[in-house]
Image (cartoon, rainbow, N blue to C red; front, side):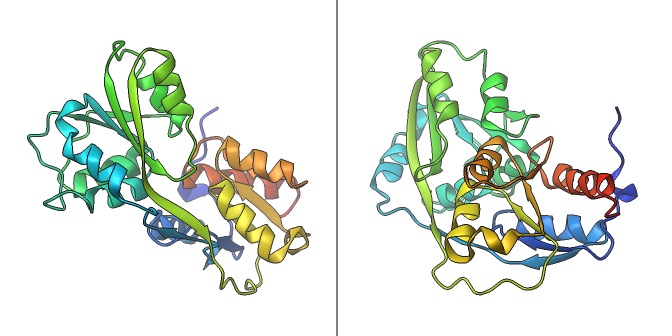
Length: 255
């Protein structure tokens, strides 16, 4: 089935809570929901912070030419990684190839002077692992991630014989000053940590009678473990999330 074009999707007047932190495609998400006729409501539940120590990341940067590949799974990882480079930009003559999960992460690399050798069409770690399936055993790979981030990609590459260094580029913390949310119809979450922070502060009762919509299997699993039912995007991007919400509400007679 061919998905409906975004111009045909209507969430007219729907108040959508956007819990993404500033810098993690928050503006892109707001624009996508606005285009669909919704009213986006910024409500970040987590803050993005530097790692507790830069030492491991800086040591990896010092030996950057020893890596065959760098893989980036988020725009935030790109931003924090580049902030530690001597010039604040990727160098075009870098030996190391760069791979990205999805077009947005690839664009983040390119805006900072990098050239992306590979973009996974499936914007998940599973997709990037599949795109890198031809890496030879012994290939050296650098993975800058969030502290406590998902390690599936590194595990798959190591199982294939690659030498993978995972370094912490940033960390997330629940917002300690999280206020009561504005009135909303739908709450969206792109990470388990964002959902956990919301529930810790407001409890599951804050989602009673609302639509909970998530991106990705790990966030969906977090919702289930909290006893919640969620609308899950077919692909891990905002357009798929908009479509999933529209389909859900249409099936319930909400649109």
